[in-house]
Image (cartoon, rainbow, N blue to C red; front, side, top):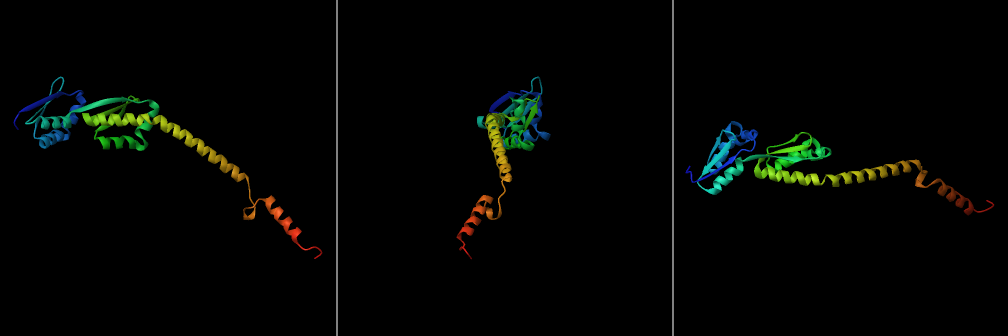
Amino acid sequence: CNSGVTDEFVVEDESLVGFIIGSGGENIKKVRQEHDVEVSVLDGSPTKVVIRGETREQVAAARAQCEFVSKIIPVEQDMIGWMFGKAGRNIQEIKAKTGVVKITLYQETKLVVVGVRDAVETAATLLECHAQYFAVYQEMDRETSLIDKSFEELEINEKGRRKGKGGKGRSEKGQERSQEVESRPKGG
């Protein structure tokens, strides 16, 4: 590989080095093959990643694929269940859509999102939008509960009213019989 263009970045958090390298060096190998670049992870304080390639486009694409970051998103404690969803479904869906490698709960009121920079920014936007709907869904839940309660009250009231055969109330049936008696011929 000709070393025409070089770019480097400092790893923000040492815990991210493992993601950059990947299990058994898989991520670095993949980036090298896909973009025809050289990628070096330089130990030090702080750790640096150096990328060399023939074109700016190759180097930029390689950097986008190996520059892992983490972002902390504050979340109100009563929203944690809402954010995760049943069995973590919301988080799994956001991970699948954005490609972030990890979303975890930290200190009970923060979500930590880990992945490549673009994926983390997209996931953060989705999480923040999801959080904005919390109040709307709470109000919908409250209204649904009120409607359910109204239906329950209606069912209880209906059970208290018994109807006779044929669906006619007792007073109606009694009126019907009295009309039959009046219409019979007299003296017979």
